[in-house]
Length: 333
Ligand code: PBG
Image 1 (tube, rainbow, N blue to C red):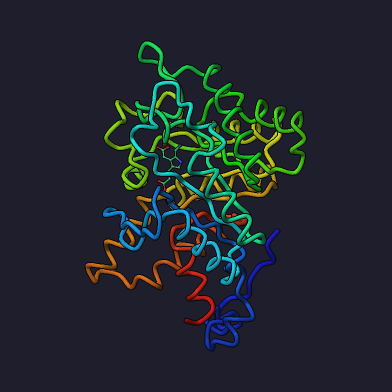
Image 2 (cartoon, rainbow, N blue to C red):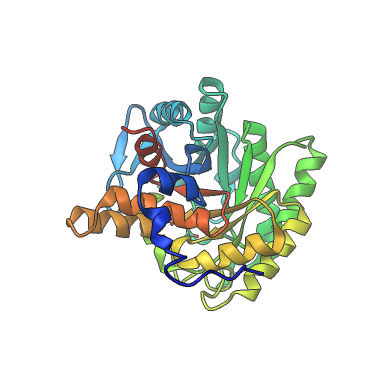
């Protein structure tokens, strides 16, 4: 129980806010570069940085530039980057075979970064949407997203990523049973130390719009993802998803989007005490950046405040497009 507080003036809560030194002493949460995972979009070509219009400041990088980005992240103390491929249209097919091609863009980027910057952890996304002609995360049969056939494909995709050398596999597809299937296949193949960061509580959200532009999936997507991603109205269901994924072999779990779902982060951490991450998604980045560009908010302060919110809500770390900017701000430049 909370001890009772003496009434005013014995208690003046402003005392511990009065100076920077006192504020430092009583600060309950901290944000460090070690809390950050940086999502990076990769594309074909060489020496290319192609701006994503709906995400000012974010670029699609050719593999050589992604290696430079990884080097920069490593130097800033950011422990992990997360790769998202912008797949060429000819590699988006009904069978999604490019997803497990050992030489696909994501796997080539993984190998290049691993050999140049061995210290940084590489995370990759498991889902079929960058490779499918429908823009969905799973196979579509007669207008329905089929679960079990999709899971088989996701296992192949995950194995090819593990072969390429990733440290963290992030299934973002929201099919049932995929964590157990991927974990079993990784163990069988001898990839005992590849970690799974499950997008366990992923909501069917309007905040993914700019991301779909960035990976070129917006045009293709027919319909929505509500038969697999969660209903924003639900909380208990998120806990069931997380419990299930941990039981199936997830090492870490994620809540996505971030800022509109801080209640889910807090409940997840309190309930399971597992490594918990949030994804500050593209739409959140776009909102903050647009308001900043209009001069309506102080961008740096809003960025730092938005990230501290995740720490306060119990997250161990955050995937954010702001990662290098945050790390530079924390370093004082
Ligand atoms: C795809 C995937 C999405 C995001 C990460 N992986 C989009 C979606 O589910 O449609 C969104 C990330 C963001 O908006 O920043 N499986």
